[in-house]
Image (cartoon, rainbow, N blue to C red; front, top):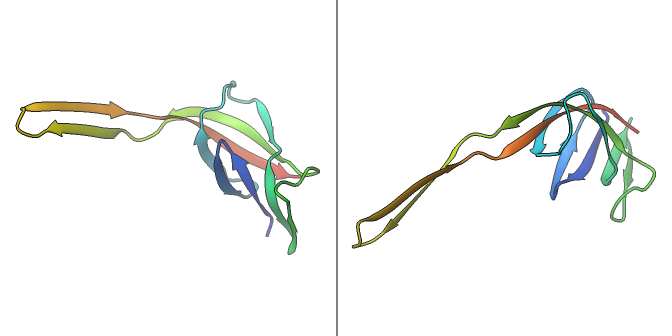
Length: 103
């Protein structure tokens, strides 16, 4: 089983080749190739490499599939005894990546 744990935009993500992942927005066009070089751990054929904190010789080759929005979050604030209400919504911009290979 091949996988890597990668630090992407402040989050640690377990990535496997051939799978899709939604991460925070990365500027780029669909079809662009991105190499993620902050690899923390790599496991290839039961051989595990652990970085301190990162592996400098390893990277994950990914491709931007499309840009999407996350599910809507509703923020509702109430001030007691003042009849003040505020309802807002937020949708985070995300980038969907396809992991092609782990080097």
